Length: 256
Image (tube, rainbow, N blue to C red; front, side, top):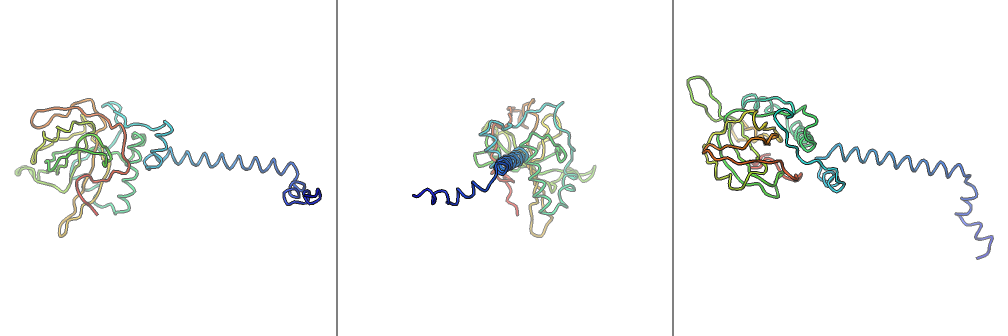
């Protein structure tokens, strides 16, 4: 190729016209944009560990926090509510509000409840309806889950009767054989101590021609004490090693 044609190429003309200051500005602008993108990217990943893609990325980076085993002195602050108060708290939330709340509850749980603004502990009597072992498709894959319905005493002259609150009590690390220790009709006495069972998910369960139920999925935050069943058997629970953020709630009850 002739020398004059090579010099008159588009690239050559651009290089001749651009002063050194232009290239300095271009390099520094690119570096600044990359720094801003990196900052926004990592802020998004670390700020939203409950999103499946972020959770996997944090795991690959070695920055994933496993669910923490609190003790009774370090457990996050939070309201402790009985079945009547639980129903009142969640009944009036519209579907959008419940969806936003559940996303926030999952986010702070994955982050070990550094923000306890919405943390709520359950208490009261609950009658066992169903039990099952947890599997890979569940949010927590190792342990058992118990579905129970709240019992509320209408007055001093009548025994406790079923109420409009369902609880899914998730027990991470419990042996699969523990499901046999709970039978239909057994009554769970749940209080804040010693397990600090925290609400992880809430949903309305519609019932045609009747008031909806509120289903609450709960998980202990304190693991110091063994779980003692109504039949006197006991077993230990441990925090989950890993979470399946694609696991669906509620565990037992289909909802809309």
